[in-house]
Length: 234
Image (tube, rainbow, N blue to C red; front, side, top):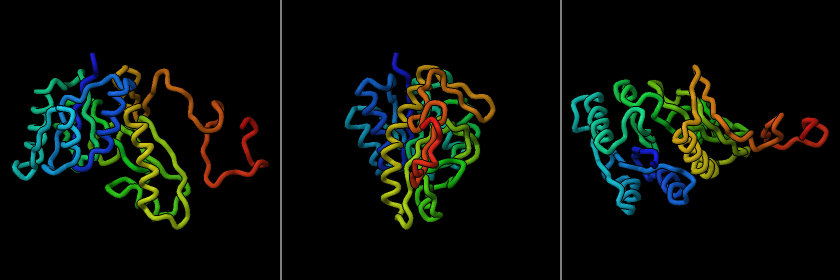
């Protein structure tokens, strides 16, 4: 049976689309049961509607408190067959902090993707902050969600080079391409029961070694090293 997912969006939903594409290709054995948004004009809703996936708009301004809003989201998600132990909640550009009550309803089953290498550059402008700071390596992070913004245990990260003087937009575009790879991968691991958490460490059973360098010494460096400075087994 496909792994049930509820996806929360506030904007374009490009990561939602990447998940749907991987499901269609057979790489991700999951099913998006419902897409929720706090924005009625979110493009992510239209992406879902094209595939006849149920959608729901809940405006947070219609609720007396954050807790009441989140409880209604829990109710909707549960109604579509995504419950604790039987699925996951996927944040795909959902621009609201979740309450502890929401997280308790889906323990270790709420995931988020962030366009920076956490714990560096948390918040809503991860790629732009990295570009402004002048880092040499940037990237993205899929992590479990806890009560602190962009703080939960890291599942997978991917790295791209960042270039001196580069504007945020081209850097963010390179990062986004990798977001569309690592988010479905993390969900696939979760769906297959390959993830376990010990403290802040997420263990991935059966995962392949890192793709840069060697299995013994995985690395990515930017700018590149000259031959005399490479690891001996590279």
